Amino acid sequence: MVRVSVGASNPEYVNARVRSRRASLFADEDYRKLIRMGPSEIARFMEETEYEREINALGTRFSGVDLIEYALNQNLAKHFDDLLEWSDGRLYDLISRYLRKFDVWNLKTIIRGIYTDTGSEEIETDLIRAGELDDRTLDRLLEVDTIEDAIEILSGTLFYEPLSGAYAEFEETETLVALENALDREFYEHLLEDVGQSPGQLQPQTLPQEGPMGRYVEFLQAEIDFRNARNALRLARSGADLDPAAYYIDGGVLFDESDLNRLVADYDELVDHIAENKRYGDRLSGALGRLRDADSLIQFEHALDAALLEYADTLSSIYPVSISAVLSYILAKEREVENIRAIARGREVGLTESEIEEELVIL
Image 1 (cartoon, one colour):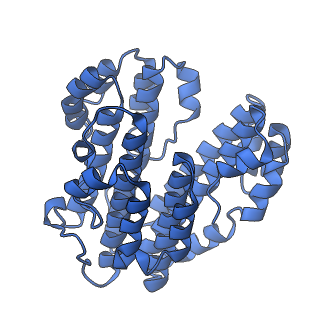
Image 2 (cartoon, rainbow, N blue to C red):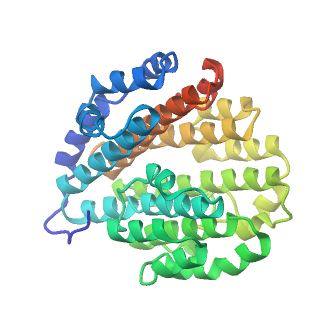
């Protein structure tokens, strides 16, 4: 949903609605119940929750994991459309631009699907239509067979030039890292520009301005920092002969390009680097403990997701009537959807309960 923002911002009203929605999210104990269920039981459990409308509407066409996934994605899009419907003025602008993250998600999903020769119906199952790209564009992207054709369809959007620029490197390396990182960079650069921040102007260890907007910038910096940490570890474990600095996203406070080159090969030092930063070390003691205990890439990535959610909650408690509370809710709702999806998929392929639990982000 995209519209022209009008009027003054209304954070008090939006945050009151967000608090109500946040209270209805699944608790960690609900996930532990779901782990013991099969896909049909999970769908029935969801029917007794706020997913009732989606489960009932889709139940005549889909079943099992497909029903669960379509219901999750439709519900997620509905909730974020509601956020935009409730919001006015500058708050609407900030939320709508942040929700472009789902354009990035959808484009990555489509590009990966083309790369792995996955069928369009299977790709569509994973799309979350909550960004600014309209349904017609997404449907056209599902019809093409090559990444180059997909990029051409995006002509006129903010993602066309960065993907076009990264395509030559994709052809040379035959990995998707360059394309995916180009999407992430474009997304974060636009977010920072929207709040009057040029990524190159942000200095490591420098706190942003005080007040609600300062906390919003601080949240964006944390997302960029954790994305850089994730990329560093992925590159280190990929075995590919790639320069980590080439995949650095500017705008955070935790790393510069030389830091990534130094830390990419040393997991313990990477975690120490995060912990020694005053901003994160003082606020994320529990999450940093999970980072230290992670013994696989997926566990590390889940620990980063938990750390970002914990950090967003902290910022929203400092300024409860600001966009920070909205961002915290968006992350929490994403976590719910991803956890339910992981449980359903894990049960479908026969993973054990302990194996499924390792796939979850549980605080």
